[in-house]
Length: 78
Image 1 (cartoon, rainbow, N blue to C red):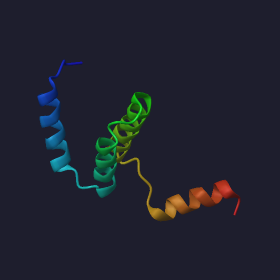
Image 2 (image 1 turned 180 degrees about the horizontal axis):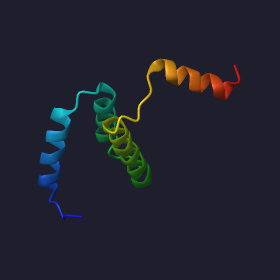
Image 3 (image 1 turned 180 degrees about the vertical axis):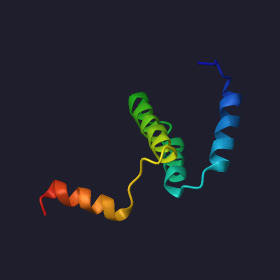
């Protein structure tokens, strides 16, 4: 992995955020940054989940509402 300076990372984040159109991802980033005083382990978990979600969306691993409802119905046994 390339050793990036904080300013380089900020620049990359600005670019990624500027290109992002998914409101839920932007909200997740906002919450993550606002909660930067959280316990380091929790911060890492939240960041990891946000990155994975972004990768899933980019790879098309998403469900529409109907698919999600069917999956949830299957879990609840209804």
